[in-house]
Length: 107
Image (cartoon, rainbow, N blue to C red; front, side, top):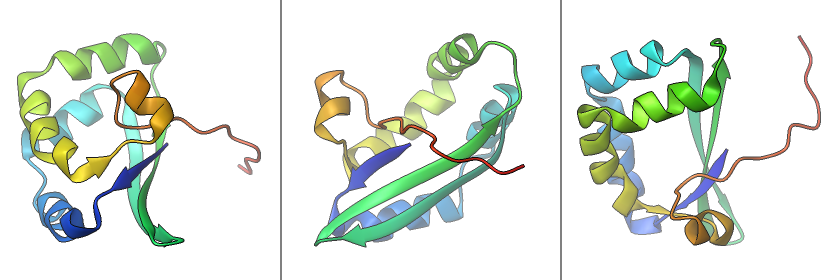
């Protein structure tokens, strides 16, 4: 997935993730997310976050709904969302992250 990040908020975003709340980590794991990484990259003067994770569950939509309903996760998103700059496609749907098409996978 991909989203933008406000240039002046990168430092705060990194600090938040250096000490991510245990309840957020627990809920991510409870929702069958493993090997979750977020990368930051500047491209053409704009800053972006790219995330990667492996989903090990059986019902992604249900697990994402469970995560979104979690009060601790909601508080976390209130901290992180103002730092991010959603791509237009996501902003139209009132979302932060945009999914990307996988074009290659090697196991």
